[in-house]
Structures are given as C-alpha cells and as structure tokens.
Image: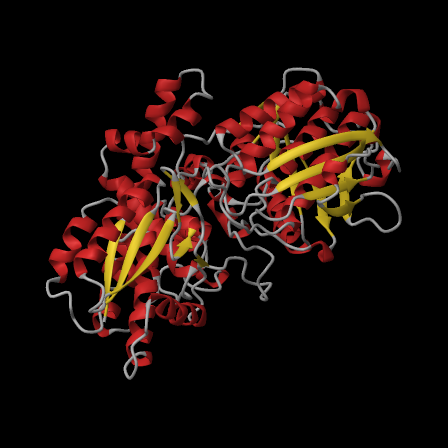
Length: 621
C-alpha cells in the first residue's frame, strides 16, 4: 500500500499522534494561490442566493476528494488477507467546513465513507473542523446573462459528460419537450470545446427549454497524476446535487449503458476498484442516501439506461433523428492527453473499442469518422502491453458472454449480478435483465467482428494486416487465452530466449545463481515482478514464491533440474507447492530449467500438475 496520506483542506488538524507518520498534503480552494480550482460557469445571479453553506461544503469536499484521488499514485503490495488491492490507498482528510454540526454527524460520515470506499476501494477517514478561510459563494461563480433560472421544479438535473450515452439521454429528454438542465465537469480546456459544441448543436435541434452549467474543477499540476480517478463520479454527482438544490430538481440523472455501469471484469486482473464503479447501482444508491441527508429531502439518483447496451443507446439517437450529433461526442478514456487537437479518440482504449462496435452495429459508422481516431480501432497497430491486452481481453470477455448460457453467466458473475440486482425493487427481474443485457452485448460484438474479419480477409491473406492489430489478434485466436496465461507465457519466453545462450559455456552452480540471472533477464525485458514476495501463512509455517505478479494473483517458481537433484524430488516439491499456493488462492507457473534433458517425458511430468486449475509448466530449453 502506498504511504498513508493526510490531506489538510482549509482546516487545522487536532493533535493526533496517529497521523504524524502520514505524508501530508495541503489542499485549498481559498486565497490568492489555490491548488484546487472550482468555477461554475454561466449561472444566473439568483444561483448564489440558493447556494447554502452546506452545499458549498459539499462542493469543496468533493473537489478535495477528487484532487486527492487524481494526484496519489497507486502502488504497493497486497495485504496478507487478500482484502486490499496493491494499489489501495489510505486517505485521512481534515476539512474546514461551514456547517460543522452537520458534517460531524455519525450517519453523514458513514454515508460519505461507504460511498467513497465502494467507488475506489480505498480507505477514507474525515475530521471536520471549523473553516479557516471561508470562501464566499460568489468566488466560485461566473455569472451568465440570465437574470434568473428560466425554470424551477424540474424533474432531474442531467449529467452531461459529452459522451454518446449522456447525449442520447439529453436528446431523449429534449425530444419530449421537457425542460433540460445539463451539468458538466470540465477538468481541462480541451474537453470544454466539444461539450460546448455539442450543447449548441443540441439547442439548435430541439425547441425544449435547456440550460448548460459547465463546472471547472481541476488541480495544480505539481500535485501529481493518477489516471484511474475512481471518485470522479462523486465529484460529478455532487456538482449535479448543488445545481439541483438551486433549481429545486427532484434529483440527478445519469445516462450510461448497463455494460459500462456494472462493468463486469473483462480480464482476470480487473478486480475490485480496477473495474470502475462510477455509475454502478450500489454507488448510485449510496449517493442518493448521502444527498438526501445533505439536502434534507428525498433526492433521487438514477440511470434509466442501465438495461441498455451501447448499441441500443446509439439507436436512441437514430430514433430521434439526431445521429449527426455523434461526431461531436467523445468517449475516449484518454481525452486531453493527445498531441493532436483534431483527433479526440485514441483508438486503443476499451471505450474506443466499445464506441466503434456500437456505431457500426447501429448502422451509424459514417457519423463517427475514422479521422477522429489517432489509431484505427480494428486494424491499427497496437503497442505491446496495455494496448494489445485491452483489445484481446475486451474481445475475450464479449465472446465468452456470447457463448455462455444465461445460467452460466449467472453462476460465473453471481456476486456482481446479485449485488447490483439488490438495488432494484424487483431483484430477480433485475438479475435476469442484467444477464440478458450482457448476452445482447456479446452477440453484438461477435456479429460486428465477424463482419470486419470478412471485410479484411484479403489483407489477412496477403499479410498486410498489422499483426498487432485487434483483428489480427482475433484471427490468431489470442482472445481464447486468459490474460494471466499470456503473461506467464511472456515470462517463460523471455527466460527461454535468454538463459540458454547465457549458460551455454557454464551452467549455474545452484538455483540462487540461476534466479539472479533470471532477475536480470526479466528486468531487461521490462517484466516487473516482485522477488520472494509475499510471505503467507500455511499450517504452522509460511510460504513464498520466487517471484510474484500480485495484480494477476500469479506466482512464478523456478526449478533447476540437475544430476544432484532428482526429478522425483522436484516433483515432490511442486506437489507441496500446489497445495500451499492453491490454498493461498494463487495461480502458479513452474519454469523448469532442464539443460541436460534429464526430464525425458515432459508431458508426463507436467500432466499431474496442469490438471489443477491455475497451474502451468514451462520448460527451458
């Protein structure tokens, strides 16, 4: 776990020795040199009259939490009880607030911490103290030319990210001639351009009354960067709640397809917070509970698109004759990080893959120009590592969903499905809806990829298709192999390529010397493993692997076959490892260095090992 952090947010901490060893970071939105910046744009003058001290507190707390999340890198080791991700963090906030009595209520603290912990899988604690420098509400407002809000008592404030899903939701509301209040978070200038263009196009197309409240919340660059930013939806929903208070809305509404909202892990290593929970039903439930306490009235947070696939979301735009607006949306996970300001999609992340498949399946590919992508999603070259893995894992997950029966999906993802389904009034019906949703998603991906493979068959035959592209990977059945197996094979291939030439003239004298050679080869190849970690209890003793890749729950064991070490002895040691490592819920690849060919029948040697789930054997040479 990364070093625990103490964030001092416009407040003085009480004397607490337990906080002395934490890395301390000072955050402030006040004064002449703030490092957290908050600005609500184009709001009416009456807004500041409706912005209560408690709402300002919420706005600041959300901004401080988001800043801490976005600036603290995730790293470190797993806990012995497997309960903590290697990237989990421990945050303690001291926040100066205006409504001290309210924020110090136990039920408020519990609601806040439960929401944040679920979103990010981090540990949160808060000390609320009297605010040191009180920022006037007007400081956060950039007043527009509206003398008052054009309407009150709207049904919902709609969160408007500028992506396909939020656009479809806005179009659906506007087409019904319902008043529309859109709220956007703008962390960087690049994202504001498309949001503004998209709103202008939306306003020009529909006659419904609508306003757009862009909110700038960002941090100073010197605070650092962490790209996961799992608490962003807390910030996002808090912005919506603050605006909803002023327009007297009944709640906040997200529009996001259910595949993304539930976000079943697409790869073996996507666990806990690595599978984003930004609009997960449980997250929305916890937001609803918190904001109902803050606003002292029933306050709804919902997502009407939870049972829709991405393709079905695009079809909403088609049904309302608004598909020409697709070109103004941005779905990329890496927005703002490209050098080219004319290309808004990287073409390599899972969101770009999802978007392209959806617009093709909905028959709207021409409305999503290829020129908007830095790299072609399907035939563009992909770098080794993340770019190739995310493509293969996305396809593997979707094709498995397509091939599994509904019962198999329900069994495999029972925890994820039941946890989400319990947030709905009719849980059994919701569970069936979730399973059906994912079956439709899998079928769509299979259909689109089949069409594309037929289209690109000629290039595959001639070898013109880049071998690292998504379609080439699919054609080569790379998606049939789990990510941890691919990683284990990569480790074995690095060692198989390096050990024989290094050890041709002189064999290592023992296993520790061989391990040292392997360390150098793996580091030189950019394979990051932890040596002899972690120690884990078993029976009355402990156990540890030669190397570990804990994010994959993968251990690597090196076995050196020598004349002085009998093959049967190695087999006995591996049998013991299988029991201990399996009990500790670890996959294991046994890399067997056999320079003299003493293992005559390798298939027989490996047979009893690989019949255990999560156990592999790879021989060198």
